[in-house]
Length: 302
Image 1 (tube, rainbow, N blue to C red):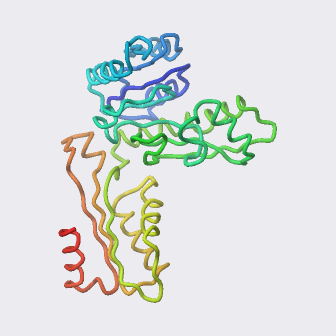
Image 2: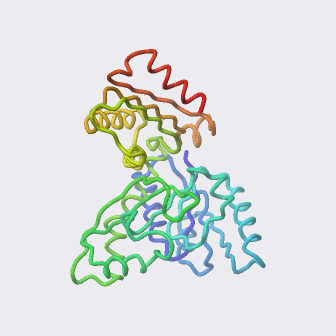
Image 3: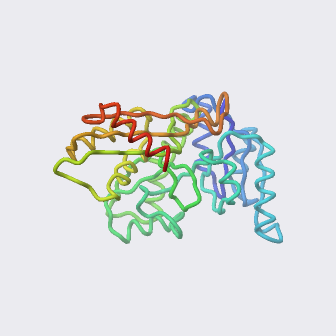
């Protein structure tokens, strides 16, 4: 059973979507251990009460310093022994120490298609105001893991929503919630609860023997990023990177090795935080054993 904490600052519509998902079984193997808010007047706390869920209010305003708040926030969160922290409209900067302790165990919902209209300054209605002022035709929502940056963590799910000519920020905000946020947040939690979100942190090593084409140093990194940011399986990702390199660059040979840690090992069952899985595929001249050994030797000695 995946135990989650839901952090929210306002009305808690995403919290309600999660509660409904658990009750109607679109979210399985999951229970809400606690709802945390920084706002004592947040209706989300009432929603929790109505469903018999523990709730607490902890606000930076009640502490002499941000450091004291951060320390107590983490202490109280740890007391509930949750597997996953869900940020569902939580307008508080997550403490750095909390991100370190809960690496790949915090997810957030953002009301745009990241990397558009995200980062510092983009929250709430400001996101939708930005969408309308830019004149884009499609927006949406994104569920992603939280890292040290702002809206920069690996993407789990996204859903697009059409922008209409008559939209106001408020109208667009409601449509994004109804057509995207309330759908993909429960789905992301269910995927994590059932071990279907796998590659969370890792390294990719690529070697190739150029034919008539070569690529700049940034291109392999961009290629890996494009595949790794998808909802992905490590074995398939390794194959996709190899096939893409072979088809586009047409080298004499390619080798791809992926080293990654998996949420299903870190959060559930054996809970082995440092366990990793390595996959490797090769083509062309790298079918030669000596050439592969040279590649592996370079990695060992780097």
